[in-house]
Image (cartoon, rainbow, N blue to C red):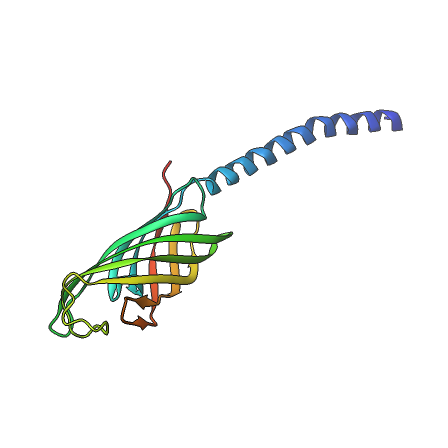
Length: 176
């Protein structure tokens, strides 16, 4: 084969291969973008944090994104020190970040019902007590799979401000 035929053959092969390669890249990119464009939903167990002792929680975003504005709600219980307190943490939160790593900020309330004189909120017992909560922390949240959080969670009411922290472990899933 002479040189001109080789050049024509190479150009023809490249003309067939390059568009197919680019099409495959677009499909991969669209799949990746569609995964990141699905709303994140988590279930997790938290030690301390807005649930005060131990709580089971659900977290979701309000839009079809992995980050942005969302909320969490949970239920917790503390039966230590002859107490029996049920806690209901509710927060609005915001996630900033990408690639499974997020900074989380949030604000909300934890409603307490029961009796525990051990909480430092100038309150005899906790029946009907509402505590303000904030969250400032790190969240590892893949598209699906194991989720981890570590956060600073100040607690407050009209009488006190208590520094607090929490850690949680859970699972992120997405709806089809």
